[in-house]
Amino acid sequence: MNGVLEKIMTQKKLEVEKLKATNPISELIKHPMLERKPVSMQEAIVSGSGLIAEFKRASPSKGIIRQDADAASIVSGYEEAGASAVSVLTDSQFFQAKEEDILTARKSVNIPILRKDFMIDEYQVYQSKIMGADCILLIAAILDKETMRHLLNIASDLGLDAIIELHKHEELDKLSGNEKIIGVNNRNLDTFEVDINTSLKLADQIGGVIRISESGLGSESNLNELIGAGYDGFLIGESFMKEADPGKAALEFVQQLSALKP
Image (cartoon, rainbow, N blue to C red):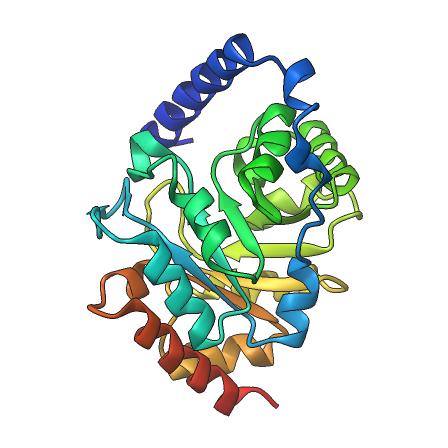
């Protein structure tokens, strides 16, 4: 892990312990929102455009992107544009997320919501469903195989989908075979450089699941190659959030995807 990721993980562990002390999991599991029926991310990706459009205020690598963005209008614009799902960042310290962002998104759209955060404990999985998320992100780079399998099982028990995020070949060893959706992040977590060849190189090694390519997307040639390599979905946030009208940018991407897909 690089220095930034180590800082994030140190902070995340402190956050989770504080949450457990304030509202223990024994109380959390009684929450009525745990009875909510999630919207299927798997079905949305396969039957729709495949776009997962992200609401994101900032990032450690890019700094402030759109700090005062209105979550309701932007995610609604994504849904109207034809996005299969929306992704919402929930980390406040490093991504400037507001506590109400994902709650606002849940009230604003009917498509699946991915909670994008650094999941390290089952507490966060229960918390995600209570927030209104339908899917969580499990990052192989920060989890050992046993923990990742445990969190995936908890998510499944709660009816949530999970995207297992890979960054390199070595992380394939952490897969259990129970994954339904695998995302390949083209951003190198050590250098923050982006290279879509990461997705292309791993494509043949993650067959039999729904495949999502993340980061550094947008050009027609990139999409052509990724669709040809078997990718079903594409997670995009920064390029949309920088536009004056993120919904319009998402619509143009969906139209581009539609023209390229067989």
